[in-house]
Structure formats: C-alpha cells, structure tokens
Length: 556
Ligand code: KIV
Ligand code: ZN
Image (tube, rainbow, N blue to C red):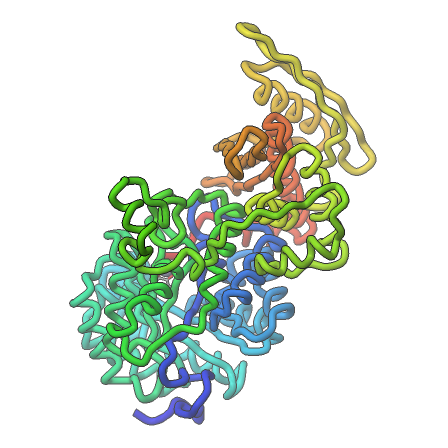
C-alpha cells in the first residue's frame, strides 16, 4: 500500500501516519468517550484541568471532544487546541455534513491537529441506525476523509474509525480501510464499540488490517469493556501490530467504560517480554494524580479493587502477604507503588508556610500553578491548615480540583445557618446573591442538609425561575482521621428542564464541616446549571437546540 494522498508514512518520528519504531501511541479519550459516561459532564475549566494532567502524563494524543455536539464542547476543544502544546489534539466528527467542518474549525489552531471521523460499518448499525447501504457508508467515509485532508493539509493526522468494526463483515471492513487510506487517512481505528470481541479473535482481526493497510497508515484500536475485556483486547491488538491504543483514565466511558490507560500502560511496562521492543512514553509516576483528578471532577469513584489505581491495589491485608512484602516487595508486588505515583508523603503546611513552598509541593505532585490560581489554592490550604492537623497530598489535589470546578460570577452564597435536634425536623436559612439581587430564605427539612437545600431552592426560584433537583448525593472523607475534609458531590438538573434526559451538572464541596461541603456542592451545581442556561440563552435558540440534540443523542 502506498502512502495516503501525498502524506509521508515512514520516518523516524511520530507524526501523521507514522509512529516511531518501538513506540505505542497513547490516544487518550477521557475528555470525549470518558465524558460520555452518564453523569460525568465536565465544564470547560474542568476539561482544561484534565487536559493539563494528560500533558503531564505525556500522552501522545488528547481527544478533547466532539465539537458539533454542543457549543460547550466546541469551546472546550478549541481552548484545549489553543492552550496545550507538545501533544496532538483530536476532535471527533460523524461522516456527515457539518460535523467535520465544525471539528476542523475547533482544532485548526492546535500545534498538531488530529481529525477523527467515524461512521458505522456493521450491517446491524447500517440497517437499523443509519438506514444506509454499505456502498453509501463507504462513499461517505471517503468523502469526509478527503475533506479533512484538504481542509487541514498534509501535516495533519486524519483518523478514520469504522464504528462497530468487530461486528462488521471483515471483507467489507478491509475494503473501507483501504479506500480511506487512499483518500488520505493516516490512522485507521478498529473500535470494538460494544465490547463484544474476545482477545484471540480481536488480535486476528487487527493482524488482517495491519497486513492490508499497515504500511500506509497507523493501525489503532478502541476497546469497550462490556465483557471486562477492554484491556485484554487492547493488548492482544498491540501484539498483532496495532501501534495506537485509545484509552481513558480510570477506564471511564460509555456503559462499562473504555480500556483503561493505567492498565494498558502498566501492562506494557511490567511485561516487556510480551511486547518486545515496545513501550509507551507515559510518565507513569503521574498516573495516580491523573486518576484522582478525573475521579474528583467527574464524581466517578474508583472502586477500591480497581487494578493499578484502586485504594487496595497496593494494600496487603493477609499476614502471609504482609510478611512476604516486608521481606521483599517482589513477593507480592509486580510493580512498585512509586512507579504509579503513590509516594504517600504528607506535607507539613502550617499557617506560616509560604506560597513558594506550596508551589514547589504542587510541582512535585505534577500540578503547575501560578498567579491567581496559586493564590486561590494557597488561601484554601492555609484555611485548611487552621482546622486540620496535617494537610496531605490528597487534600491538596482535592483543593486543586475544587478550584478548577469553580464557576465565577453566578450564584454567590452569603451566609447560612441550620438548627437540628434529635427526633425533630431541621431548619435552615441561606442568603444567596444572583447579579444585584439578594434573597434570604428559610426552610425546614428532614435533616440539616435537606433543610439547607430547600432553603437554596426557595431563595433561587424567584430570581432565576428554577431550582436544582437533586439526582445524586455522596459524601466521603478525602483522607483518614477525625479531622479529615469531607468531600461532597452532588448531581442535579434544573426543575424547569423539559429535555429527556435532562442536562445534569455535578457540584463539589470541600470542608472539614460536612454540612458546609454539602451546601457548597449544591450551590456549585446550581451555578453550573445557571451558567449553562445563560450560555444557551446567549447562543440563541439554535445553540440551545444543538445542545439539547447532543444531550439526547449521545455517541457510542
Ligand atoms: O466506541 C466507538 O465506536 C467510538 C468511536 C466513535 C471511535 O467511540
Ligand atoms: Zn467508544
């Protein structure tokens, strides 16, 4: 197979259509497929924070979103494209009028733009979802790959995905891949969209694609975890010649999620003889920080027994294991906690600690803050040091995450108070300001948090015409100890929402007082809903309709 439409396909470095020999390219889709997990919705500021964590991990490609799906997604992709360097920024688009144009517009400014177009190729999707023939799907694939190549030029990466590839007739699939490579695609992706494949079978399919188009394009895989095989399938694909893997932090993603970045990367690193001469460039010591940040911002708690990043992944409970690990960690540990960034140090930050000390400590944790962002975390850390004996790494990362989730100039919480007694109802009072209007409301509820949430509703409704409706509430301790900070997480939608499903927002609160963190979380979620409502109003009915359409018709 010759190189695609004038694009160089061989050579030393990673670039369009080529991956440096010995390298497995890590394509992170936490911000696109991961963010599609129900309820994981992130704001633009939160997405930027995750993008920074991905840059610190040194992934090769960040798939930043699906720009045609909503104005918010367009903005997030565009800002990540403008503000991140040293990494390729990808945008997803369906093979249909409008989508690829919007994606190109969003990523054109990136240092390394990476357009990702896709269309389903399995008969089941063609017949029941797209109502298209195979030939029509093939023609659309070629048309939009060609468009991408012309719009972005010869130096851009153009990736084509055949959605539901693992359930597609292999002969047709190979025809499609050949045609798109001839039209200018430099990466062909093989998605196991519904997590249906079994490793040996998937490896064999990948091997056939590599034989057919591997000299003209990078072969990539994208595995879902419906049968718990996403990592196994991804690794089988690498052994069969795939050189790009699409993964997410914590395995976040639609339904049972995607192949997890940390599992794939640590497998490559821990079992080099199974992947001779291959490695990723990921800075594995950054894995825990990225995992905690993504978990915090999305509200998806990592299960304790999750491989690599779960709280128990390096904990040894039984006496026999503990004895072995004390004598030699190799007895029961196949990788070191340090290799994934679990150093477990604590920071003594007291009331007199300086900003510089904090900045240095944050750098050790992989977070580079300065200016107003550093000041804000510093103020919070000093306040925390007043109420807590020891401010730990986990506390600091939670403060950084909280700062990223803050939404400015919306609904400001003034004062609050609550009374609660055994056996009786609680009464709460809050004062809120929205713009130049301030309201105080009092309400009673079956507990202090319920009373305060009702008071927020009563204060807010007359001003904005809706109140948040609570869908989920969680509270957990950030660290161990009696003085631990309580991190509250809520998911809410607007009482006025008519969409099915409604747009949801998450809110976080962090305090050593769990009533305060619960209230903060609720007001933060209200703020995000308010900002979204205002953006839709400012963007006009077309933008609002586009946002509604995207929420209703989420991607695979
Ligand atoms: O799972 C899937 O098929 C996808 C494609 C859009 C790559 O996410
Ligand atoms: Zn997917």
